[in-house]
Image 1 (cartoon, rainbow, N blue to C red):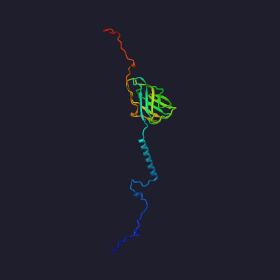
Image 2 (image 1 turned 120 degrees about the horizontal axis):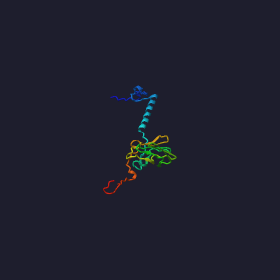
Image 3 (image 1 turned 60 degrees about the vertical axis):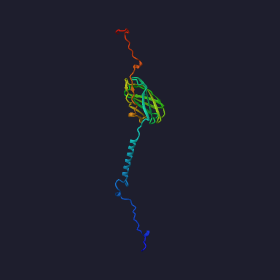
Length: 218
């Protein structure tokens, strides 16, 4: 038997390899091969719009870290009280920032001309419009994020009869241009308080018969 002859590599035919990209028509739809300048710009705009909307939907709203709460120092109906407001900043309050508090309509009057503060320095100007109290800072330093602030507000007259005050309507901090920094809303607003009946101002009533003689009329 004749020996099997194995062809050498030089005897093998050379494969033909074409180094060229497929035509766009050969690429299945849905797979981008290349995009023109105009379509790329359109795609970039759509992507940017998507990112902006996503940030708006997922971004956190300005909110206090704790509180706020407002509690009158007396809940007797018709009494003049000092209301103590407490909150913890979620955003720093600048040296010229503001605190705005709208009391419930059930309060008779809000007549404060000054307030005292803990953990908030500088001069505090007070303006009242209806049931809305605006405290404007000046001459102090920034109140840092996460600071627990206490404000004592005098000359708040409780409603004239017993019952609920209703919830506070507005509680927010702003910068000097009224841009909101922190704001409470819904269930985060200060809770309602319940006013109790007055006890005749602490003066008990008295009833004295005209005659103390047994059986007498009058």
